Each structure stands twice: as C-alpha cells, then as structure tokens.
Image (cartoon, rainbow, N blue to C red; front, side, top):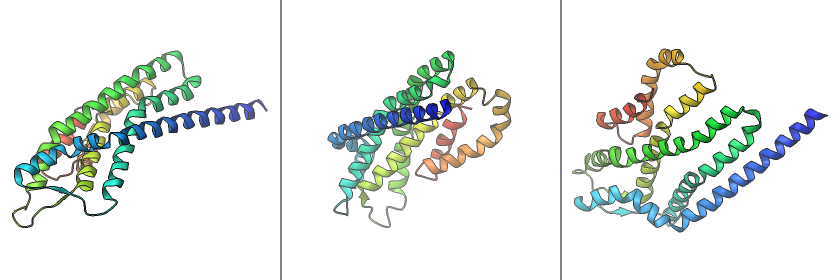
Length: 226
C-alpha cells in the first residue's frame, strides 16, 4: 500500500512539474512571438546582407508561409528561454532520489549548459554561417536566378544554430555521466575512434553544405570536446 501511495505521489509530482514546464514554455513562446520580427531579422541577416551585395532578395511564396515560419521561430526561441525553468523542474523532480553532492552538481550544471549552448550558437552564427551561405548562394548562380525563400533560410539557420549549440554540450554531458559513474576515461578513450566517425556524420547532418571547410569546422568542434 505504501509503494502504491508513493507511486501515486510521484505521478502527481510529475504531472505538476510537466504542467509548470508547459506553462513556462507557452509564456516564453508568446513573448518570443511578440518579438518575432527582431528574432527573424537576426536569423536572416547573414543571408540578407550577402544577398544585398549580390542583388538577391528574400521572398515568400505561400500565403501562410510567413506566419508558420514566425510560429516555428517563436517556439524555438520560447524553448530556449524557458529551458532554465524546465531544467529547474526536472531537478526538483529527481532531487529526492539524489545525494547532496549530486544535487549540487546538477545546480552547477545549469549555468554550464546555458553557456555551452550560447557558445555553440555563437560559433555557428559567426563562424560557420558566413562561409556556408557564401557557398550555397554562389554555387551555380550563374545558371539559374536564385529566389531565396524566407522559410528556407530560417529553417537552415535554426537547424544549424540549434545543433551547433547541442554539439557544444558534449563536454558537459560527458562530465555529468562521469560524475554519475556511467562512463570512464578508459571507456571514452576506447570509444574515440568511433566518435571520429560519428562527429563527421553529425557534421554532415548539421551543416547545410557539403564543402570540406564547413565539414571540418562542424566535426572539429565536436571532436575537440572528447
């Protein structure tokens, strides 16, 4: 009977944490939607700056394209903004089953996660994006006339920046797994050769181009953390 009550209490606590996490996500998404023009402006700025020098313009070809793109961008921005709150509720849910040192590590884990993600996004925006867009927007443009859709460039930018942010989380994740005893230095050294292959595969998925320059940058950022 005690275990049943304990299970019910855990389910109630889980429902409570999920509820407040969803509320935080909705509020942050709503705030981001208010500023969607500024957010989209930042996302399309590299392509717009390059396109203006080449006589290219950003267009949209469907009635609902701009609205759907704005909602998608607002949701992604809302998720990033609400992540500290979501992570807080995750910690509160799992905290009863952790030791004091493990709880302290999780609390210190949050700023490191946010900093690593921001560094990854900055790396993708300022280092990977310029050469990637130069390659994409000049490849064969002497044959057809390029018309760049807003939704396409936003999707490319969101995917690139998001996954670069995630790739920079690698050292933080490995550190936490090591603290929990799930991985070891010997195991990571044995796994290094496989990680090289995985890093190049991830770079092929993350980066929007297949040129060696961006592949090396994308995979190198992940390899350097292991």
